[in-house]
Image 1 (cartoon, one colour):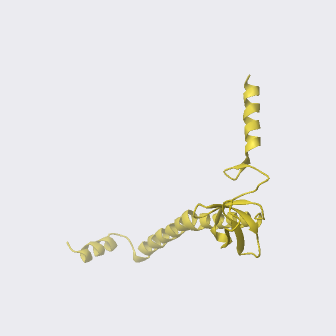
Image 2 (cartoon, helix red, strand yellow):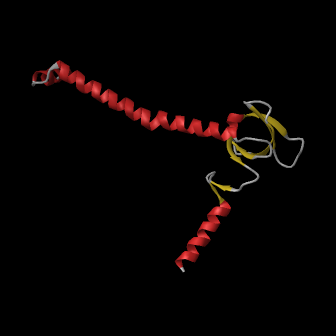
Length: 133
């Protein structure tokens, strides 16, 4: 059988052309919703998180760039540029775009995964051990 015969047999078996179009529209809508929830929404959430992280950027913060270099922020001249010092060499100060910053560590707090203070986590573990005894 050829393709035209198979397609015409499907439409003659009780389905109307309107019913087939409704199913096609339904599948397209499901596909668009899947794309939104699996791709677009997480990207928006990540961009918002990055923007909030950049608001906390100030001189003295230790950063890691997207290429894996660690440095210290020396100055924030405008909304797009930061001047970063890499290593102990005072001559290695490089202006770079803020979007090239992957992580920020504030020198006043030590964090694990950017979420919890390390000292608080250690204290919580000690409290848990004491309560079990």
